[in-house]
Structures are given as structure tokens and as C-alpha cells.
Amino acid sequence: MMYQKPKGTRDLYGRDLMRIEKVCSSARSFFFTRGYQEIRTPVFEYADLFIRSIGETTDIVEKENYTFEINERRYMLRPEGTASVLRAIIENKISLPRRFLYIEPMFRKERPQKGRYREFIQIGIEHIGEIGPLYDAEMIEHGKRFLDGLGMEGVTIEVNSIGCPECRTEYKKVLSGFLEPHISELCADCLRRKERNFLRIFDCRNEQCQEVYDQAPKITDTLCRACTEHYEKVKHYLNAFSVIFRENKKLVRGLDYYTRTVFEFKAGNLGAQDTILAGGRYDILMKELGGPDTPALGWAMGVDRMMFTLPEGKPAIEAPEKFFLVVMGKTLFSRALDIRKVIHDHGYVCILGDHEESVKHQLKKANKLQANYTVIFGEDEARENACTIKDMQSGKQEKVLIHALDDFLAKKVRI
Ligand SMILES: [Zn+2]
Ligand SMILES: [Zn+2]
Image (cartoon, rainbow, N blue to C red; front, side):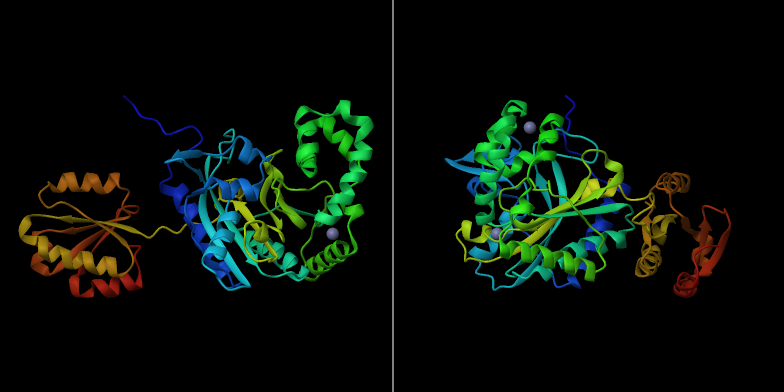
């Protein structure tokens, strides 16, 4: 019996994992300097939390989640980060305003494709307790500068405002009037969404539907005064932050909880599924989840898809030099450990050879493990209180006295 990993998952190791870890550690230091603290929430929560926050008519809740039941309680593997962060703030009575960063795996039962997995890593930030449009713009700027720092090129930023519940009631009337004569041109999904979650019809991927929506009045044109003012200021601050963006009046985002500002970052080379970062404001969600009436905003980035679009060799990985210590015979073993310690203390990798194996066998292993250097400690070396260091690339070797090894490693490695 040969076991296989579930569809849409992967095993991460070697260079791929090192690149992901590099991106995550860059995120930690970048967002720390911008006032974000890291938060970790459970991998699973009571399913109700996500159903309430993400919305019953979303793809995630309708068909893409991993739900399981134990003792008549339903749980869901976390499909996104925001609901959990808000739940944690409410439950732990965390004082506000506050900025949080999360770097965690999420789970969605989507059709696997390029850079898209059913277990995927998201980097997300949440800024809770601020109403000012300055922070909408600043949060977009954070995303842009972070991606710039990773070496990302060709990212376009789209923004829109989908207003508050009041603007939406007004817009729903206007839109329904417009759609009336076009009903027969819309797909079944859109007809269903039109009733239950009408803004989301704009997310439809059906071309015929999109042709209708191109002509439709947009929510941005029927915003209330306060929402119009907020949106204008967001754009003003984006300019002040020197962030280049494009307005996309059809941008609504796939989750129910957004209000006012929404935005997406797109990478040119991913085709139709080109969104790598997305977010917005969600001023009513905290209250909806039973917390205080608190404005908030956030975004999340799919690390895997984002990395797909990074230029070759980014982020750069510096793997430390690797030494393989060949020890000849058990009498030399404890002295060999001193050599090993010096190498480790310099931050290099040092793999200890098994002195019960032949020298030939140990050297073979050094090759297999792709050591940059082999360090040989045999009878001759022991007598002279030295070791022989061989550069596996150039083939050159040098005898180094053990008491001078520290200086040798500090000064240079290449022989
Ligand atoms: Zn409004
Ligand atoms: Zn449609």
C-alpha cells in the first residue's frame, strides 16, 4: 500500500520551504516596524464563526470548506484569518486600537491549480479600531512596500468603495431596476446571488453576465455623502503615499463583511486568477460577531501565489557553508567534537561522520550530502594537533592547527 497526500496539498522541504520561510520572516520584521504584533489563532473554530462572518452565500461557506462534527458540535478548518482575529479580540478583551499580523495555513476545498492549494499559507494584517481613511491608504501602502522589498515587479493595485449598509440599500434599488430587462441574460448563480447577496454578482466569471454588468450603474456612483468623502480621502492619501492605483468600479470582493474601501493587488503573469493580495474595510463585522461597534480593516496575501510571480532567485536564499567532519577511529572521537563545536560556533553547518564507518564510506557520504568542505581528522592530524580542510569545489586542501581553527574560519573559508 502506497499512501499519497490528499489532492491539493503538498509536502514542503528543501529550497521551496526555505523560500517560503524567508518570505515569512521578512514579513515579521517588516510589519513589526509598522506596529503589528503577531497573533496565532486555532487552526479550527466553531463553524458558526465563519458562516456568520464570511456569509452563507459565499463559495467558501457553500462548498469550499472543511467541516467536521464531534459530539454534535460543528467545526471548520480556518478558511481565512479575519474572523478568528476578531473573535480573539472580543474573547480576550484586547484593548484597541491594535494591529495584528498573522502568518498561518488556511484551508479551502478549491479546484487545485497553479500556485493554488487546498492548504495554503496566508500572510495577513488587521488594523482594528480605526475609522480614519488615512489607515485604509496606509494599509495598502504597507502591502505595496512589502512586495517591493521582496523584489516583486509588475503589480497593479485596484481600489473601490462599496459603501455602508445605507448606500447599499439605495444601490440595490437602482441596480434591480437596471437588471430587470436583462434577467434572461444572467447565469443561475447570479440570479441566486442577486436575491441573497446582490453585490457579489460582479464576481461572476461568466462573460455574458459581465457584459451586462459593464453597462450597469456602479455602487461608487450612489455612495452616501460620508462614504463618498471617505473614499475621496483614501485616494488622496494613496497619492500622498506615492502609491499608484487604478479605480475598478466592479471590484466588490467575495466576502460579505466588507464596507467602504476594498482593494486587490494583481500580478500580471498569473492569468485570470491574478489576485495575490486582497482586503478592505469591515466596519460592521466586529458588532456582527457580538463585539463592540468597532471599525476595522485588513488584507491577506496568498504566499504561494505571490511567490509564483516573484522574479527568478527572489527572495535570495543564503544557505550557510556545509562541512563534513571525517573522523578516523574511536580514539579520536572526543577530540573531533571540539573541532565540530568551533565550526558550529561560526554558524556553519557541520555534519559529523560516524567514526565506526570507513573513511571511504564517510567521504562518499560527504559527497552525497553536498558538503562544501570536508574536514579530516586522522592519526597524522591528531599528532600535529591539526585538521585537514578540503574545499570540495576546488579540490584544494590546507592543514589548519586546531588552536588556529577559530581564526581560520573567521577570516575566510574558501581555500
Ligand atoms: Zn454610505
Ligand atoms: Zn453570472
